[in-house]
Length: 262
Ligand code: HEM
Image 1 (cartoon, helix red, strand yellow):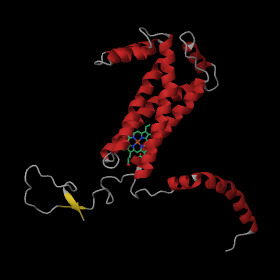
Image 2 (spheres, protein in one colour; image 1 turned 135 degrees about the horizontal axis):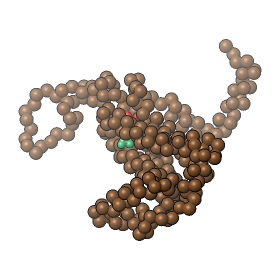
Image 3 (cartoon, protein in one colour; image 1 turned 90 degrees about the horizontal axis):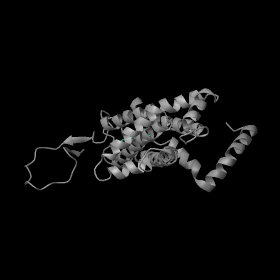
Image 4 (cartoon, protein in one colour; image 1 turned 180 degrees about the vertical axis):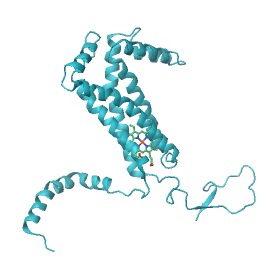
């Protein structure tokens, strides 16, 4: 059926800016490739854990930016600024609560996602690099928790950080340097708080954003793995190798472990 004049005009208006952008950047094609790429037909709810972790991280980023508008990283005003956020600022209690509880949600989801990847064998070739990126994300995520815990500057925060820094200090060779770096001197004080704040809201989130970008790039490049019980799972089309003369000790024949491709 031919398109009406009105429809053609609407299409022109919608497509003009998109074509303009595509011609100059290739972004539209890239987004289309990302959204319409093929994934195995038998993915299931467990495959959503990575996106759930991503959502939890984004919630932390947004609520963190809002908190940073009111928080003061100075020993004389840090505690008061947190009280101000909780009791005076409109919905401050909600934003602070979301950030505090969201930190645990983020870490727990990361572990659930990692367990899914491990149990589905999704860390194997060719996804080892993405597993390594994931391990770095896990470490940075936990460092976020450690550095954020000091910021309310109350008794719990202070003493938990004393314990954390002392634990680091007991490490072999690098321990004392690490403790002194974290303390920003020989004692916990104003510089420690400012240092933890800068690590917590600048360095770590920046590194996590960059690593998530790499993680997602590798997922799109390599595709998502099918569950191990799937007919499409890697290696599912292999058959057992027929009985063979045992090879001479020390000689290894390269080939798929336990079978050959059909
Ligand atoms: C900030 C933390 C993380 C985010 C936002 C994240 C996000 C994602 C997303 C969206 C996916 C694709 C969908 C899925 O399989 O769930 C994925 C896949 C993957 N993730 Fe993560 N992830 C994180 C941490 C980790 C950790 C801690 C590990 C392991 C140590 C890991 C290893 C992997 C691997 C190997 C894949 C590929 C799985 C496959 O192809 O089936 N990720 N991640």
